[in-house]
Amino acid sequence: RGKGDKIKELKKAASSASRVLLATDPDREGEAISWHLAYLLDIDPKSECRIVFNEINKEAVKEAIKHPRSIDMGLVDAQQARRVLDRLVGYQISPLLWQKVRRGLSAGRVQSAALKMICDRENEIKSFVPEEYWTITADYGDNFNASLSKYNGEDIRITTAEEADTIENQLNAGKFVVESVKTGKRKPKPYAPFTTSSLQQDASIKLGFQTKKTMQIAQQLYEGIDVKGIGTRGLITYLRTDSVRVSSVAKESAAEYITAHFGAEYSHNNSFSNKNKDIQDAHEAIRPTDIARTPTHVKDSLTREQFRLYQLIWKRFVSSLMSGA
Image (cartoon, rainbow, N blue to C red):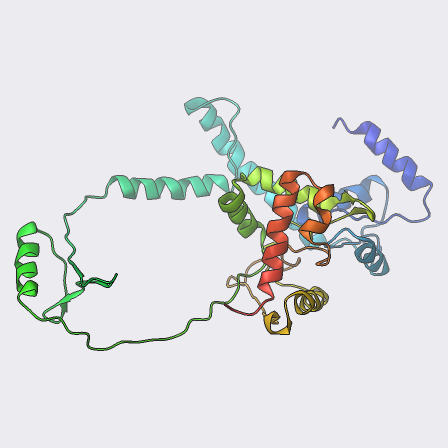
């Protein structure tokens, strides 16, 4: 409703075209929009009318046009089921919120369940009964401290001052010996490239961005920025993804960049996989569309906030394909 002029405009454009390709977002929402458009424009959804790309640049779009497909009704049905669930939950709970809290509030299938979990956790915290406990730490000087973990060969929990004093006196009367020293090396692997949720978390911690702001800026970087000297380019891949997978082409270009700028010893072909096997793996992780387009290179074309988020994404991706520390 209310989109009559837009529909007329689309129908007019479609009538003068020899072929229509639907290139909405590469997710279930985008698939459903393509399905609605096919209906409005009288396009057979079983025909090869749908193209998808993970990044908005010339090469990706040209490649997508070479491989059109029919509309995926599985994704369309998934989006319709999601809408039904939203209504089943929302229509039941929203009126209750209006009565008890404030008019105009809405409840959804995700935040309602999440709120229930938060409330249960808060109730656990409120019902917690604190118990007294004591710790004993020995200071041997030269920044060498040790905490008491076992007493007479058994794990210990000290619950009174008297008990702590008794043990302390016994320890002071004894002799302290270093029985063994273990040395070792740790080699931490770099973090995986960003998913939607890890990007939101890191942007919140490091940049102080709220989730909504992060997604708005990421959308701008995905849709395209007018970069001085080269024109409008999508700077990052699709921003709604649960996957940490990276294409082989992106890995190769990252390896070339790291070898050229840091040295071959810093390049490492790290592979990442999701622990949860139920995720949608339709899209890659969030990464720069062109690793050679460094944050410094595009800084003059970006707002301060766009630059900070792009730099976060670029650095995370480059570091993900470097050797461990």
